[in-house]
Length: 303
Image 1 (cartoon, rainbow, N blue to C red):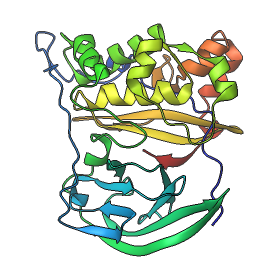
Image 2 (cartoon, rainbow, N blue to C red):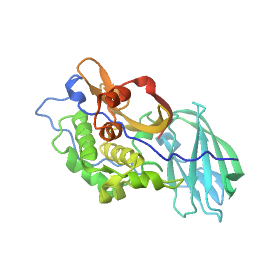
Image 3 (cartoon, one colour):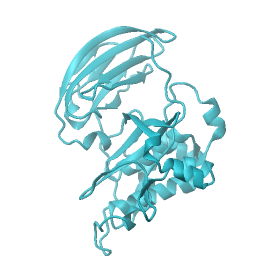
């Protein structure tokens, strides 16, 4: 089965100063908790699909994730998850003894779970085909747990940094604003990496912190990890901005719900604000008009 080329260029979009535009969610004297809240996935083996060398542990599917592991001799395997939204998500797994969390972002419903092993090039052999009925304990859980695209844990440095960054914030919106500002003020876009990144690249959030550089995928993963570790449900959304593969972020706030894409209030309406495009375009009027036009964006995948 031919596998499409992986995403090579992603950009970040997040939500700056919404506190100016929405009703106050907390009194000025209130301080939200800033201690990390990290949801840790595991693979207890209570229910498993497939067989060695490719296993998918679905024991905690109600929490919005499955765990996958490939221990074969091929260069890689693929787990394809197709949920009730009919979108096929392909997750590439190199040989490893460790399980990797994969999100169930299509929500509750019936999933096809298919496993493939690389033969050569882009040719894959089928290892198994199975199905899974999912009833999520909460629709928000897929956007709180780490997954292969946004991988972090209790000891990840980005988690500690998020707690420091939001300390003293009086609302989730204020916490989002602080994390957003930290990322765009401290991470520099790496043009050389963007030009040379190889297929199958996945970000490591602590590497991004250590080098203070990254491509758009790194921006998005770091920001999402920091927000999720603060118990703020966050969707890393992938699609197209015009003809360019792109990524933006939506956040969930109690009493407001999902706030889609990176949104900034401009005084006369809601406007997307994309820091990668804006910085590379020196915040030119043409760039700001482009990223403010929702018709330029087409969502394909959620992670």
